[in-house]
Amino acid sequence: MTRRLFMGWTVGLFSILVLLPHIAHSDIYMKQKQHIDAISAMGQNQPAQDLIVEIWITKTKMMTSNEKQKTVVDLEKQVVTFADHEKKTVTTMPLDFTQMVKNQEKEMSAEDQAAFQQFMGKMMDIKVSVKPTSEKKKIGKWECQKYIQTIEMAMGTMTSEIWATTDIKIDEQLYAKFNAALMAQMPGLSQNVNKIMEETQKIKGVHVLSKQTNEMMGQSFSSSTELIDFKEAAAPAGVFAMPSGYKSQNPF
Image (cartoon, rainbow, N blue to C red; front, side, top):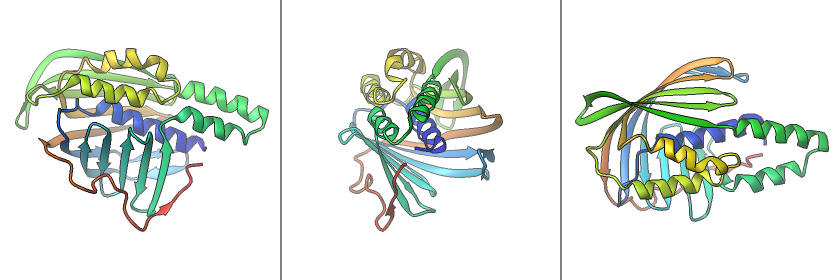
């Protein structure tokens, strides 16, 4: 697996884990407005993006979708699948990341294995801290409280200003179960699940607005996510299916 793919998978999945709201009893639907500044890193240039993101969550599956990509996490099958709408490709990776890494290491020399293991150890050293504040304000139709969340990783630091509301009724235990199940699959995070969960659960309620400042690999950029719709409803048939006609892509 390339370092670029590994970092993208790690940051992407971990961002889903720490930024999703607590899951309600029934299926839930969310629509978010997302902005990401232009990014230039590792020889890749990505222009600024403004996207509308739709999310469906059930007790065993989660789907996020925008005009560029679709991601489905399936806890029953223990896989995460990505669809790239621009390249017309679909990539499936196991949530059991440890076994995937072992398979990758079999193809390496002893020297490369040692270097890769050292790289993996550094990449998965993730620390999360949440600081509640006394600031409150109304955003849209929801009364919110402000929290400061910091995620420290080997590749950089993400600092978030998160405004969350308790106006929307939630089931924190179900959220914790879903979140822990995902974290337990990721090497380096499994031994820190309880501590990370303890921190993220300091944020009470559903995230309405979050503004992130990212310092990654010598680059600085900002992003934001705002909740514009939230409802409890049965997930429609086929919402977790991948687009037809896309080419299957090997993650390695």
